[in-house]
Amino acid sequence: MTNEVVHLEHIWVQHNGVPILEDISLGILENDFVGIIGPNGGGKTTLLKVILGLIQPTRGRVTVLGKHPEDSRNSIGYVPQHNLFDRQFPISVWEVVLMGRNGRVGLFKRYSSEDKAKAEESLDSVGMLQHAGRQIGKLSGGEQQRVLISRALVSEPRLLLLDEPTASVDPAMQTEFYELLEELKKRMAVVIVSHDIGAVSVYVDKIACLNVQLHYHGSKELSDDILEATYKCPVQMIAHGTIPHRVLKEH
Image: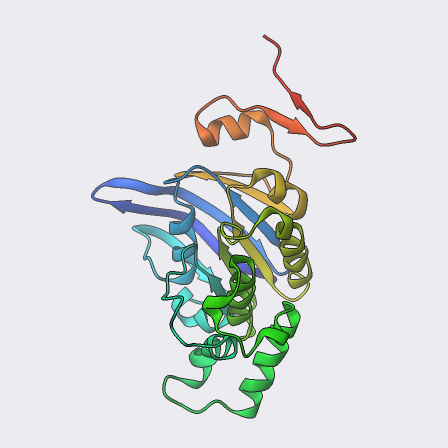
């Protein structure tokens, strides 16, 4: 399809003969907001790294924006699951975000006025422009995550990949965070890996369930059969209405 941003066709990834991803086929379109859920060790992060071109599939075909992932990397924004850094290191929010332009300007080159304008615009879009001069290690977990999204956005991506972005965000800020992603999908495709099935099912347009194999049907409707196939155990569905209640199978 002409508006397909990511195309995965019969992707296999193996390590020492053990399948990590098994026969994955998936298409992600422009302005899609896709949630990927599944258990730990199910291959979610590996799938993102295949899209980034950081892991080569054992077999199968992957294209991003019609090209090999490595050739499209400047058009991909990525927020990894773990951001380990010395919280005392004296680097400001502004400097962190500008680093997101390195893929375009190259290392050790001076940032142009356009680069700085893009950094300001990016920080403003995530509500962090007023914190530009602060040391990033002094921010809360939620604020740091917004800065890292800003760093991903400053390269003007057409695809944004986020790996467990709410892991360090307190519950009070999660709604605001997902609303930010809803705004971003107007400009790009957004793919989020998360364990938070409830929040993901509210905000995303489509859900893929991944546990080595992919269970995906192009919508965000989740059946207990799909969840049980993904998590390999019985699952209780909870419906949220005026009064939240469990929906249990008949015994």
